[in-house]
Image 1: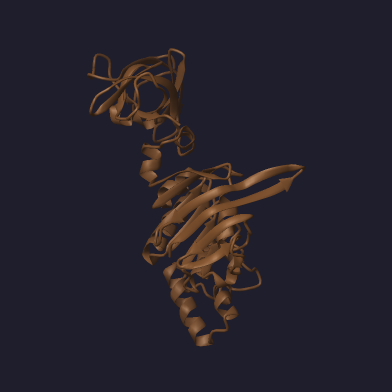
Image 2: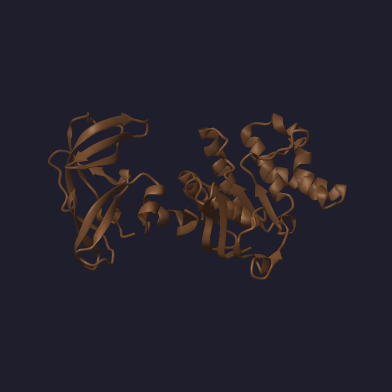
Length: 361
């Protein structure tokens, strides 16, 4: 089910100031995709999600789910949340402590006054789908955090919604459980083949779960793309910086050919992936820490050789995290954990042109 958001704005007033939670947001969320709203706290992503659900009323604009307009300021349309055909999983799970797992999951069906046999069949099927078969009579709050999250997911799914929405549902889990639940959630949602809208400020969650990501800032959609597009080929400096660790370096375009763009920077003259930018233009050179290829003494390549010195070196298991000084620039880098390097050592590295991203915004 496709979701269309047109010119939606929402303002709050606090201490005499106007806060633009949503600022003329235009967005189409494709059907049958996992679509993530990603951004820092206060960027408007949860307000947008709650507007889709019907828990917030925008100041103006229009929201459609499939062929139905569910809210329109101009046409004075408001479809109540319970009639929008949506499921929602909250950050706090919203598990009812006085109910067992079965009753928690069955609640949306009970409010629709379905027969006991239909409810039993649907709940059992949904619990099996989320790998909680055999847990129906357990007290819901006696389960682990990951299991409670699956109960919340089952409750959102049991009524077979057209769209399911998630408001930072993994933020209360520890790091390892969060990683495991993230993988499960991706598998569940892919198998369902329905539209899922996911809100998070965690870039790893967004990259791991999503088919598409919309990055938000100050109430606006800054950029939309696949996880790989957003990470490897961002169009905006803010997006490149927010989606992952990055070295952002001032540069100036000097020349172009059919396949590459040449720039001058504090790292020297570098050949970068092709961008249609006029020579003389000021740009930002973006290089991810994992794309530095360190060269043994005497080994050379034909392009993009940079010499520096290691200022700090921290072992984090799968890699060393290093700070490297190149003239006035301090670069962050990942280095193979088997490397025989120490703080203060000189170092030479190569960056492939395809990993030198030029950003103009």
